[in-house]
Length: 115
Ligand code: 5GP
Image (cartoon, rainbow, N blue to C red; front, side, top):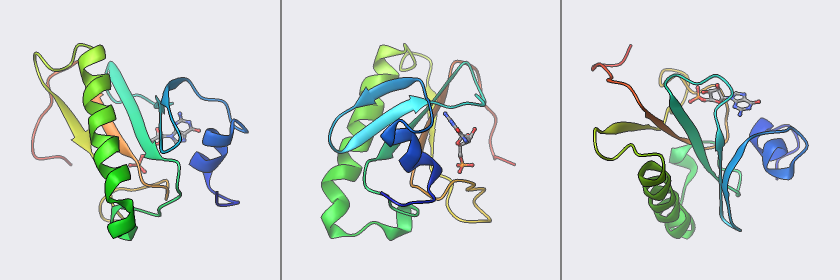
């Protein structure tokens, strides 16, 4: 856990969130400012700054994040019409919270390319 990390505080319950999934490696919760009818963040319990900070030792956690995200996408009924996974990375990638997170965004049609 990092002292000043917002998402570490959410994992610890110091900041309230609407929990979607939790185990000893992965946590998922509703985004506070949803960009679509479904907007869930899937994060590792381990505080990685962003996806580029991941190493060989994190590969099982990264795989698990994707599989949990798939499970949530199924549960939320997103897989029939499609949805989007997003990992914003760094300043130009639009990252605002520096604890790795996978966005699950769905429930409406989306455009491409992103802004
Ligand atoms: P980023 O821009 O870093 O890819 O995404 C950060 C996301 O975290 C944003 O979608 C934002 O709405 C969400 N977020 C920021 N602060 C909070 C919070 O306190 N609680 C929750 N649930 N989501 C947050």
